[in-house]
Image 1 (cartoon, rainbow, N blue to C red):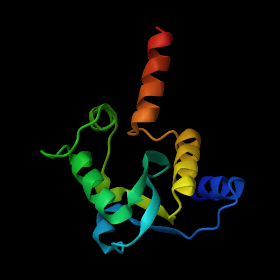
Image 2 (tube, rainbow, N blue to C red; image 1 turned 135 degrees about the vertical axis):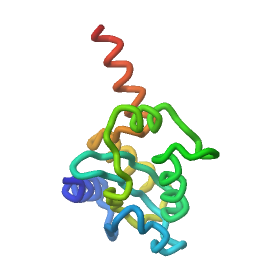
Image 3 (cartoon, one colour; image 1 turned 90 degrees about the vertical axis):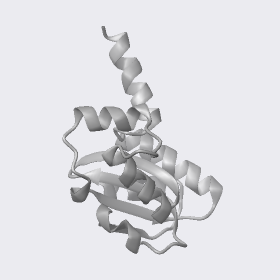
Length: 135
């Protein structure tokens, strides 16, 4: 599900990049130097889309997934833990190796828009606003 959307966004922006995938709980195996965009998913449900140093960001998300002390606990992550049956051990992470800031911002924004990840602040705020407007 995610791979065709990633390919669509890369094609739209005319960006050539490697897309890799692995089990989320094995994030420590990601080479430290890899930076770019990543998509965390559980089955068909997209949990989070982000950018940065992929290995270090995955460690932070691992802590957020479990609500560990010291992890920045945003509303989106808190809502996710309280409302969705998540199991981070079953998560997959797809990541795109990118280095240009413009490419990073474009691809991240495109993927957030198309995939509507549950824990991203942008998606959480938009979904929360829609729920309030329909009451």
